[in-house]
Amino acid sequence: MEEVKLMVFMSERLIFRELVWEDKDDLSLILQDDITMRYYNGKLSDVEVDDWLARQLQRYRDYGFGAWAVLRKDNQDLIGQCGLTMQGWKDQTLLEIGYLLRRDEWHKGYAIEAAKACKAYAFTQLDAKVVHSIIRDTNFPSKQVARRNGMREMDRWVKHYRGVDMPHTLFGIMRDEDADDELRALITF
Image 1 (cartoon, one colour):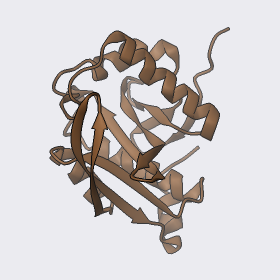
Image 2: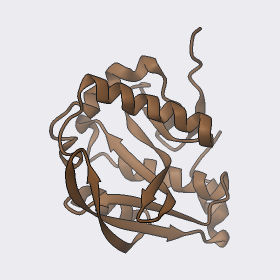
Image 3: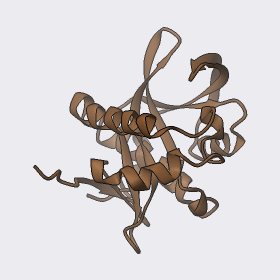
């Protein structure tokens, strides 16, 4: 049975749709790049890429959202993933905006555009009251994206991931219902 590539929403230059198994090769270009994955303690193996993709597909079933494929509108290239996931933080589960782009698409404004669009989706479509980004303490570019997305540092914690203790910073922003119209203008369906 062929999987349907479901478009979720669009921003000015980007299309957000559900990932499908046919995206594995494009996703591998990101997840198996040493530089891109340095904040995840190195690139993923083929099995870990499969697990990563399977986890996103399960999130769509469990929550109706997850990390989405991010495609450029101008050429339909899959340039990364960005979306909303439920992530553990200390003794709670938080709604998180996560983003990971192909290295050749860095420094073009796509990460902040994608993160802002996901924030807009969380607040206007999911009626979330707060969204977060959980970022490794050494990942200064992602911290800058979070700040440009209106988030502020809220907490710090050492997470154990892939056999390593990694200090992380929790960023967050609360919904301002007065800004909902402005947020709705960032995304189209």
